[in-house]
Image 1 (cartoon, rainbow, N blue to C red):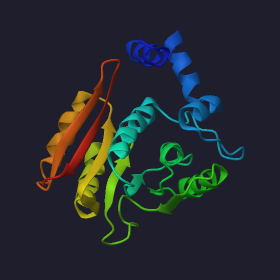
Image 2 (tube, helix red, strand yellow):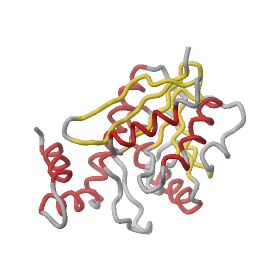
Image 3 (cartoon, rainbow, N blue to C red):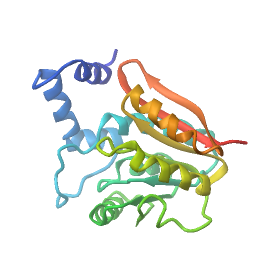
Image 4 (spheres, helix red, strand yellow):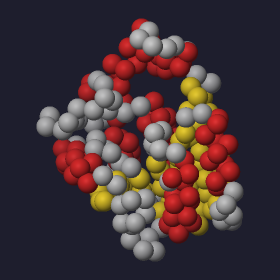
Length: 219
């Protein structure tokens, strides 16, 4: 077990103000570790959040790097890019491919644009509530979203899956994450209402309960 695995594994086994939890929270608040994990500098005027990222952001990056390496110059869309544009920015720096990015918070869109400029990332950032701002008929090889933990799945997954049917290329993939196996069961139940989509893979890690789900069109 490497130090990162130990930290996240210990966090999920601990509670309250235990040492692993305090270390974990400091880890996610560190601008230096943002730079180390994602290669992104943070704007000095941007509001400081409780956390800049979470472990799901790291896991999503690992999975997406593998998917991008299998494709030739994929067209990509990130939903919920966030103010710091960490995931899209890290992927751009790794592959030098333009990425469309959207968010349903205007302030996050503006800060994501500023972080993209600061880090010289070719990100096309725009406002969109799910796919409402995506160009009609535009299709992507990869659509990804580090889905929110604080919003019930049934409030956003139906719209996400319906939009994916319209905007995924024939062999395109939708990559999302969730926190527990309970979320997996509900996600798959909702997905069953969309017969044009199917599960391709479920990525799991023994040291963390988060899972990443890869969904594609039925061929």
